[in-house]
Length: 559
Image (tube, rainbow, N blue to C red; front, top):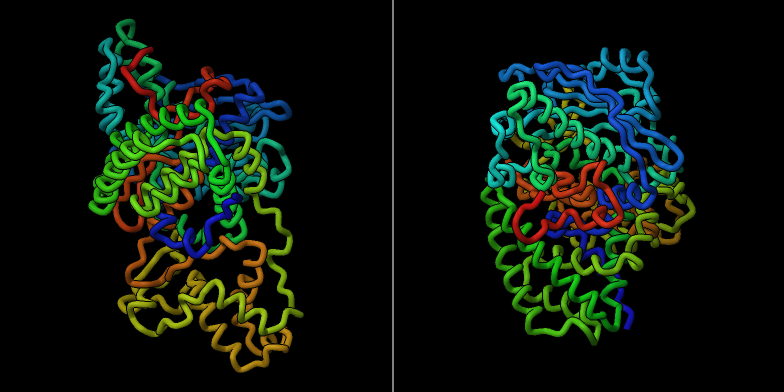
């Protein structure tokens, strides 16, 4: 029996999207697999950092066709100036990913601009712009321990997970960087966000080198080298706020492609009639490693603490079930997911859905080529489509929204707008702040409902162009409705301006595809994550360790 993809009405609820986990199709893992497979070469070309930890460094990543270079600038940042807010004006480190190998003139140009971030400008020679701040407590602990000839405390390493966290990795033409379209046809950047993921991968190496350098400067000949196994436990943190949330609304085709690829992968594995002993043993091993990952996942947010408590119970139930149930015959993965839908929370269901993909790279990994947005018709409206057809599309995707009273305060309590100061998205209270006239079109369900009602005054056999000539304000909704024929997973099936909206669900949905772990909400509007925790460093990268590094190894630490 061929199992079909799950319905968008099931997948595209915010509570489920806010429970997604990394998987084989996550962008970090796509990158590390490619770099290992193609035997990329890495080199530290320059490390002009003084004893105080200030200066610049250059790291290169050479693939089969091109070389990319991270240019890093380390600064002496006073404690009072350190902030994760997007409005910060100074950071511990700033970075740019250069397309090629920079000359001295390039480095001088970037030294005058990159530390300024938004206040500076980069060029089409650069692919990304980024910045990071230290996790001060852990940074101090690691430097002091190494300088005294000992290893840092592993529990402290695991409780924080990173020595530095980025507050942005800008790309796709922002602040003068090269536009995405100019690199979309390169093999190594065809999949989404590969330049950004490479930036973070190289930042992680720089941060490790900077920490060791600072320890050496403090401890001299008595300094210890950080144990490689401990070093691999250190990822790069990230603080992400509301600026990321509108992305999945504004890019329905791209977001559809991510979800559709994942859903197709899940359906392919569920359709398998049997599983080999090797496949099931590998799955059970990763399940055990995942239980360790969950046990090491901490959060200070009450909502996430509740989710983690339930997820740990899910893991126990799942491990117990797999002890009693055969995973070899009678569509074992389909049966397992059917059981999970009755027995686990959304968090547990989606973690399991990611895990069943792991034994099957031949079925799953090729789907990475389907995840970019190459649909050229995104902005065209088919004016000849009949109004009756458009109404059916709107009814299919927004039936849940058509009966809502969109004037009721609970249905339209929030409004998205753009901060004049920082040109970043914000979410305000519609009835408490004077923001309604600045509202951004980030409520597709409300707008679709309004368009649907307006269409009722027209005959179903009229072309939609007749309606739009009289009601151009509904163009966006009609365009989105027509897009759903190509992008069924492009629309969130929830109200993005309701009083009960949890914007962190939107953030997590996107970050899960990056491959993030250890989601730690700090409010309903921003969260911290880890990237590349457990990954090999460039000098260690090989085909044997390039993929499953996200799952912590069982047993004790060994160098």
